[in-house]
Length: 226
Image (cartoon, rainbow, N blue to C red; front, side):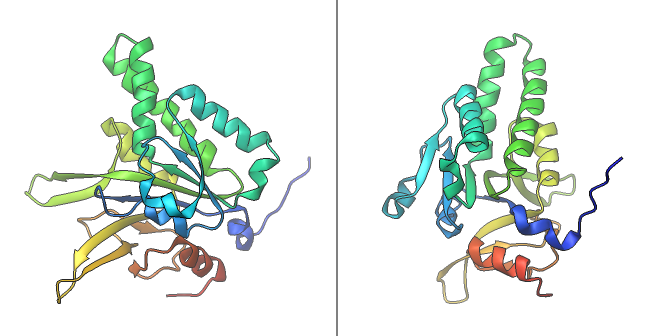
């Protein structure tokens, strides 16, 4: 039996994976321009903020479109020109999957269950491509039993939404806040505070980072400690 021994220091060579969530208009789509050589899988049709960047994208309106996009990435020489893939957004892609399952499944609970299976497979498949992977998600907020507001990434179906962060090494909250002088500031929250969900599995990021994924990728790859 042949055993292939690998080294943890090479884990990032095939790409890093990010889940970024935030409120509508926070700049999740605009963040794509900071990825190295990206191509976009778009289910939202909201790419106007990238109009001047002339980025390549594939529009998703059905499950077949999504399968075709993945197969193209797997087998096309043309896909080799891209260093990053952005799914914008995984929340909308899950809605596409759910709509499909509701058409073929009269039982609503079964439709949600099948959506959970399908979206989990989709996330794993794209995440495990040898390329940087970025998935954006909508913001969900709800009060806990003590009345505290909690913020986390949104997907249809509670079971699927709860599993979502576990698929990614980096789960970042894109925050838009006012500074002491009233100016709007955007930043990526990389460490959860019990109210906002965030995590940095690399251990290389500060609690807050500038909204530039290329710089974050370089920081993680370089291996500098905090």
